[in-house]
Length: 160
Image 1 (cartoon, rainbow, N blue to C red):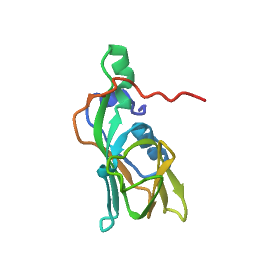
Image 2: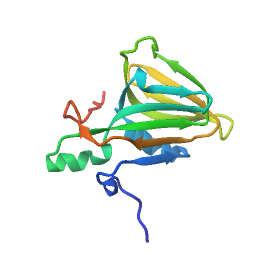
Image 3: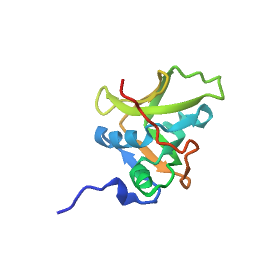
Image 4: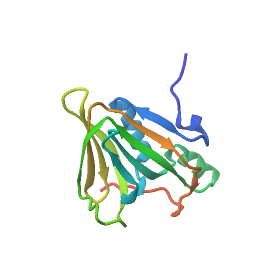
């Protein structure tokens, strides 16, 4: 009998994951929750039909182990890439403010005429980036070594 993979199985190895359905996207969404990125690290490449973000994400897959061992919480730079993009729109995103830093709350998929739909990045502060896609195809790839999170803390989400 085989068992499902666990976060701990990755160890210190960089992640490279893809999402082709909503269950997979839920995993990627959990991994990029609280990721931050400046507006300058967002690229829309219409000819390649690709929207990419260079994000600084919390290494959620290591938080429990780090806490148990007294190690600092880490972040890692990762590429979050949405492929088969037909159009991009946004709400609450001022592209003229080059100092703007965004924090990702979640990534979701809104289906339309299957297999097409919209991949939506919901951002803290009521912002959102919406990519109209031909089909759901999202990837997350760590591109640097982990580093100590500047705050040294795990982001908290108090319940109201």
